[in-house]
Structures are given as C-alpha cells and as structure tokens.
Length: 445
Image (cartoon, rainbow, N blue to C red; front, side, top):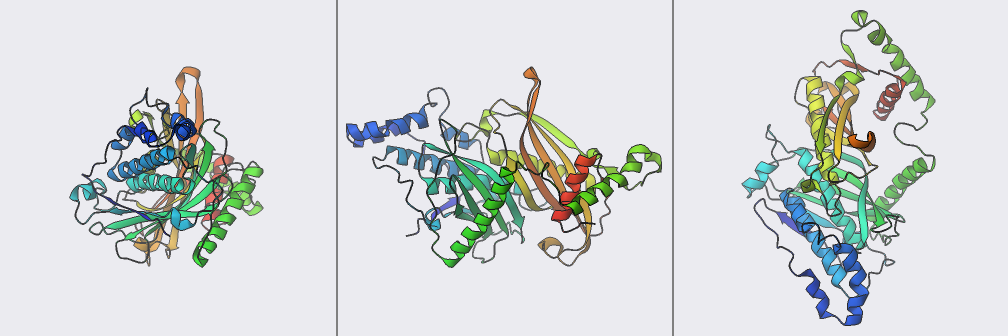
C-alpha cells in the first residue's frame, strides 16, 4: 500500500518543537530500552553541546523547515521503536513517494519568498528544496536513524515548461534505483492539476555509517509497475557509467578524451593563440575564458548547517547558482533564463566555520540556430546558450590549504539575436573542458 507523504507548505506555518524525546523509551521494557540505547546515543550525542537540530531548519525556507522537521521526527520515531529495522526487506518505490505543495494561490508570503525581481520563480530556492526533499525520500527508503545519508551528486535538473506563479505547484519524488549503498531519486515539479511536469531532477544519495563513515548496504528496491521497472533499468545504466568512471579513476577533468574531442581542443587552443600573444591584432569579439571569472568568499555559518552538522548541500547549490547567474548576466548583457543543471559533484563536505571560495567561469558559449527543447525560446533563431562552471573551494589560510569541495555546472539561455563574444581557452586544460562541453551539446567541429 502506498505511503505517499503530502505536505502543504505555507510561509507562516510553524512546526512543533520536539519535547522530551527520550520519554518514548519509557513505554518499553528495560531490555527493549537497552536495545535502542546505541541508536539514541549516536543520534543525540551532540545535543548537549549544540542547539537542538530542529533549530537548523528555522533558518531555512518554509519548505526546507517542514521537510527537516518531518525527517527529524521520523528518525526519532524509528529510534524509539522496539522493533529492529529490517534492512534486507525490499521496499517498493511507492514507500518513499513524497509530495510537497507550494501554496502560491492562497499564501502571498510564500509566493513573495519564491518570486524573483522579474516576476518569475527563484530557481535557486527550488534547488534547496530539491535537496531537502531528496533527503526525506532517501530516509523514507532506508528508515534506519543510525545511517547517515548524504548527497553524492546531481546528475541533471532540466526545465521543460513554464512556471505559473499564480498557481499552486507540486514537487514530488521517489527512489527509482538502488545499488549496494547508493540510491537514485527522481523528482519532478508540475502545476497543480497538470499532467506534464515543467522540471525533472535526478539526485544520487549514498548511505554511510555515522561512526565509521564507510558505505553501508541499504534495502533493495522492488519495482512494481512497468514504468518503475523501466526507471530502475535506466538508473542501473547511469550507475554503471558512474561506477566505471570511478574504477578508472576518471572525472570530468581527467577522463581520456575521444580523439575527435582532443582534435577540437587543439583547434580551440590554436584559435586562442593570437588573443594570448598579439591581443591588439586578435579578434575583438573574442575573449579568454579566464576573463569571465567571478568569485565570492564567505564563512560557512552554523545557520546554513544541515541535520548532519555539515553545510546544507542545497545552500551550496543556491549560492553557486546565484554566482553562475551573475556571471552569465555580466557576459551577455541581458537577463539570462535558467535551462538546466548539467552536473553537480559533492566531493568533500563543507563544515561550519570553513572559509568557502566560490569561483565561476564560462566554459561554453555558442549561438544555436534553432531551439527545440527549451520552452521559452522554441521557434526563435540565433539563441545564445551559455554554460557556467562554479567550483567551491574550502580554504584554510592558517595552514595554507585549499581543497576543491564541490563543482556545479549551470546552463542558461538569453534572447535570440543577442550578440555574445566568442570564448577561447587560455591553456589546453581549458580547451579540453570547452571541447567536452561542445561534444555534450552535439557540436564537435
């Protein structure tokens, strides 16, 4: 039987404070209490030195607040139960299905929070909600409060329709594939009462032991319908690609390139020669990739932490999105329209107190003759498409250390006919990165 969870998000709503959580154990025998004590200790050991975890959600948006509150309550309920969690029982996808509603029609305060200066939706805030919802879905599948579930990657978030801010919107998702310790979560958003979603997203979560930080086996998935079986097989194929890449030690920058892509990279680097060596005689409509760079630094504050005491991945995605948007705006000179998140890789957590340096640069800029797969510009000619890579670095000045934590790639479009400058690489590493993005866009020459 489906256990779909439905949440109606309202801007002025409040959630009950967790009171006397340990009193639940009093309803069970001493043996049962002793059997659950490790779970409780591992879950609440930090509460004596930190504010209650529920406070963390109060610094987020109303939807993240409600999602985190529900997740914490679910963890507490599971930890208080005398019955052990059966980690071998296959779960149907319906067991993790969760839905939330943006009550834009009757809640003006909520609508105002999600409205950008142009009257459209603030997609950066939706990215936060997606990460929070995916976390709830992942826990609904695992159900064990002692397991730490973390975001590993975002494979793609794609827009395919317009968003009506005067209509309620429904965000939903469920687990569609499970491996040994990882799971893929598919989410979509659509107008209330509509059949076709305007957004689709795929997140990958990994389960790790909260003490050892090693991967943990999670319950298998039991697809019930033909659609669920097709989604499972598609998730298996994506997981195999990621697994093979890890086996070979590959990633976005170091993976051996196809000979055709390498050929394009060499040509791009050659094209940049005049701009690097004789700029006064070079193409005046060209500029180097590094000239598009922007950056901002900030201290990771405790108000941006998640329930695991690390900086909320959704917050990092939103900060990176805002920087990518500004980078595109400065480059194109007109309002960008968000198209998709191409890739997000979470390689190292950001902790409270870390100095985080967000660095952006344009890695792809090309004018497309026609647009067939983006609703805002369907039928328009000469539409510039611009991809921006944002890297988040954790910097420790006291020990002269800087480590790459996360990487994000966002793609935007601007109005057809807008003139943009040609982006050229400053070195072969940048040339290979650009050539890869060209190949991903179906342009190899």
